[in-house]
Length: 141
Image 1: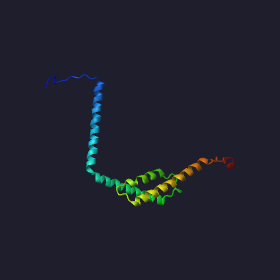
Image 2: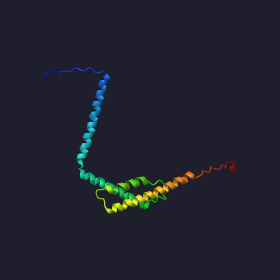
Image 3: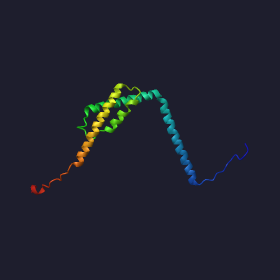
Image 4: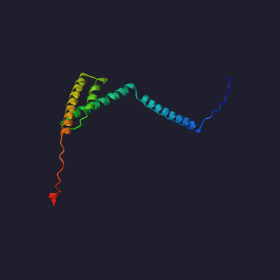
């Protein structure tokens, strides 16, 4: 191939340092991606789906327990938004059934009840009048 075999570049020290930093960052990113790839290779797609499905089933068990044992009338700040999101995603489970559909309906209804109670509490708390403490120090003497 005709042409020069050696090339001489002139760079400022700042440009050289920037190139070194970029090279180092690229090497670190490459190492991280390779590590993620190795981890992904260790778990097949079917196995990953099975694990995510099992995780979702465990979450649903916890949600059922909470709905049955933690009434919103006694627990302020029930995370009804999260419960609603959970109910809205049940239908994407690979093993979705009619029982799951019914569960989603029940969870949405419970979340709606929780939301109404929280809105009532907030309105009540906003209307509450604070009574200042009475200074009783004169009576103690």
